[in-house]
Image 1: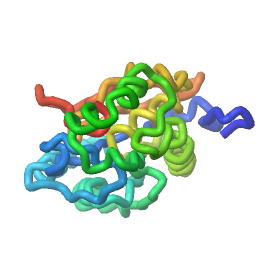
Image 2: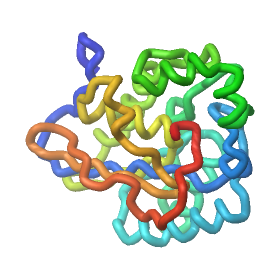
Image 3: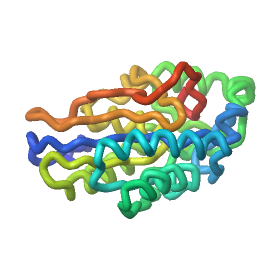
Length: 223
């Protein structure tokens, strides 16, 4: 990270690739409850999603896997680890946004109880949702974790990062050098879909977004 707070990718042109993979479905996703840092496990559908996606991602021949330590991400990562033989590094820096009193509330309850705060967040204003973290603070903790693991790759190597919708969005925004108020332009990820960043001469580029998706709604804390 530079002195100005900007995350830098180190030597450019190494051709590395980062796959940011969202966890499988949970019961709170289905109920449209804000999960945040609450440790909710995968549903049977979520496990099936993880296994299907893992088969596809294994074909990309990843070199390393790092995941949030929350169960929904860790269990998703375990499916890819089982196919590739890679060990999973777990890091709490990849957890979803802590959202204080919003956590556990449904989308409708958040709007009813915290409507002005919700509207300000959607406008791109810096908001501590529920008294929790700013999106920039999530990027401050998550992006360096991703870059630290990416820097361990050989030239042309591939890192899979298993995390959460909101955290992935902020991390992509930071690595692409976008202003924080523009991060909302990155659409949400469907459960068990992923985005791909590739390294070029000028830094990281978004190569794919919400890949692997079927025509299903995005159910998550960032929609």
